[in-house]
Image (tube, rainbow, N blue to C red; front, side, top):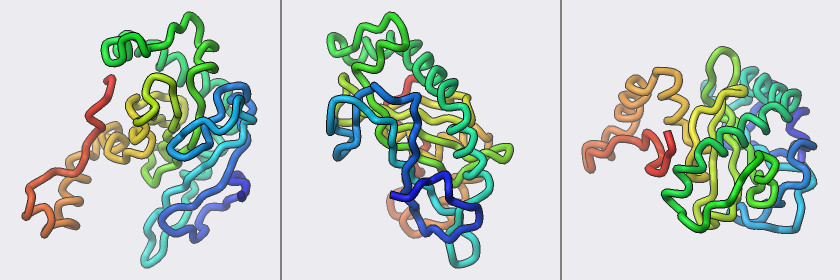
Amino acid sequence: MKNILNLKPNTIIGDLYEGSIVLDSWKGFQSRQGPYCAKDKQFATGELKVFIYGNAIDYVKISSIDQINALNFLFENQEHIKKSLLSALQNELPELTALYDDLTPSIERIEDFSSVIGLSNIHVLNSEKENYAYVGYEFGCEWEEEHGLGIMTHKDKIISIGQADTAFDCWTTFEDKGTIEMERESWKRKHSQTYKFNQDDPKIKPWWKFW
């Protein structure tokens, strides 16, 4: 698999480009590289799948400088980002307990998460703010094997925590940027026939979300 750090901006990548990255900070957590974030071996090696979502330019989809900036930021600040993700997750333990009761792990230190979760995929979206793309982290976890765990970020800021689809939910990023109404209207125009048929708005956020 291609080293994602070698990807250059303005490269034609199509809808979705797949590569890999080695993040030593995630070594020793559960290895969740199986189908649908399932366990595939005992401990993670730090090598992870990365998906880059193409930015539409004319008739092609390319990588952006904002996405490259985000990739470099997450690699250079991986330990700090890991601690931010786990600290935010620890703060949500009361909400997890309300949802999952006895399945909720007992976590006293953020290091304790290493035995109950594993980072499976990283999603670099085609949505950006202040020259950095939004990045979603998709996990497998012990308390929700079917739907997993997802965390959306901008640099080292936690935007949203929810099920796995939170890690690639662009509507969460639009909400954070304050462009949600504009994007909703754009979606309606683009899908006008479907929208008239069922009068459904696009998905704004996952139903299962802690804040």
